[in-house]
Image (cartoon, rainbow, N blue to C red; front, side, top):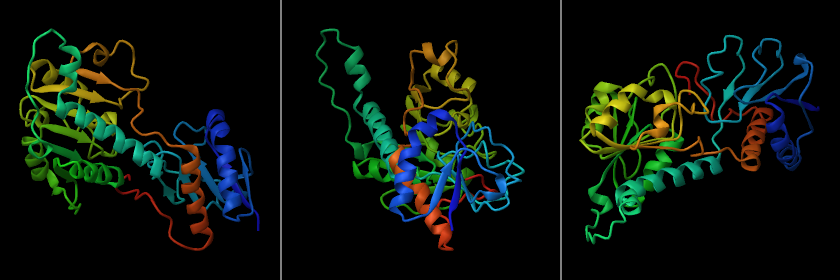
Length: 310
């Protein structure tokens, strides 16, 4: 039997992913045709990415699964025509990139590197930072990315609080859950990292009330989703000094408009959604591994729960 795999994203992604996907399919011994066009009733699997022109999944009656190229699925999970299993991307290279971004910026804040770079005024200030064990870091979100980053920070010696909607256990991390747990975590966090998915329950999670819980001078790092933070509330606490600095990699509108106040704010670092990038060769292997599982009758990995949105 020849499998038909429809690649639904656009031209740029096709050019990047075509060869790695074909190589991974061949290495797995799958008899498959990877194509950008096919009769819907002949398609066995769909490779998808946000922004694809494909929005109606109902004609794909034979399709076993929709395999997303990105970790985020908020732009597809609510599609009423989607009745096939949906799997998000959990790519080892993407995870490694996120760990490097998060640990790099946590260390930047912890060591006060910005001050050393900008304050070259000829004054000798022998002021050493505290040890990592004396620095309280909060990881909001304990999914695959959040847990890996939290463990990496704990491994460097940081005192790490982790928070999720439901109870989790992560070695080396003090875990909290629910609204009261979030309040406790924020009230003592010197550095906050947000790695939550975008769902109705996380929209504007960090609003004016919750941002006010932070100790004065806290730092914020958001490589998760732009909608997790109320932009106006964040600007207010930055202006007041309640939050000393924010490093933001994701935004409600991307690219971030040139006129947005984040660009010019002296207490904001903007990075252009580069914290974690899906790499074609490693992501192709994740896609093909799930196809192999599907053909063997095994459960798909990284399958999205439509009720939770991730």
